[in-house]
Image (cartoon, rainbow, N blue to C red; front, side, top):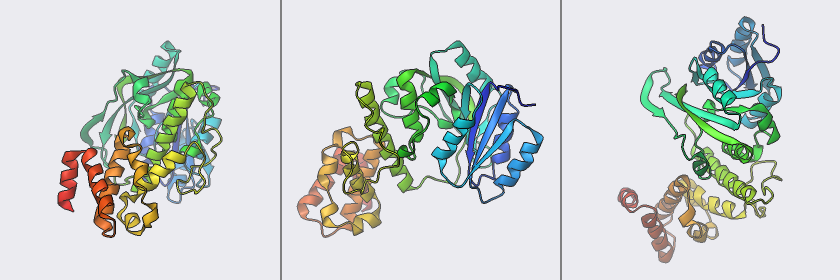
Length: 346
């Protein structure tokens, strides 16, 4: 029987996840910590996912299925958060596998470290067949706040956090599409300590469902906004992103003051797509958008800036000579060796 109050609630969102769903669910329900509930949020699956969940639920009442009509990941995560009964909440994705003692080890750590509100861990990488790929993701447990201010040190499906704190900060926010986890970590860190348990907790599956360039750019954009908002909060000022209810459109001709400079930058970064570089009107090629922020670009932004410069050089023979010289200069400033290799392929 399901305990009155489980020790841990596991939130597992899924959409069309029939291939690995049984393995993911089994890895939770066979944990050494038995006092748990598994909340699977089915985001409008059109494959065999609903049937699989019905079968699995009949065998174990700790599995609770929540359904929604393709409302997206943030809605699924917040639905799970709203229904979770335990004081501790863990995450897992439908293509990953939790190691048997994962939940017990994280629960024990949080019980002995009441100041910690967010706890991550390490992951072993596996392929689509479950075979180890010879690599592990081992984020350092040291200087986490310094790292968090620059990028996320957490592997999302390894985390466990306190339900009360998660609800206190308002859960996940839809405005930070593809970067909702990073924004969430930053807000949790505002009111508590963060840590990484230096142990393998999950098997993290890498497979053919690769992230598109558009989604990757959106993820980087959301991360930039999350960092800017966090810096304002740390300085004791109001959160400038609090009024955002949806992901900002960087093509909006009248962006808010908070996202204006970032939107200007990302209109240029999307020119990494050769098709966009070819079709962009000359008036949209705003070199100053990158030049003004060149020294502060993250590794991901720098990669897109390099690709954008190369796309423009390759696709736009109509550009003035002075502009072409500036674009070539960017490539050199952002990485001379890589620039030389890219230019040789031109």
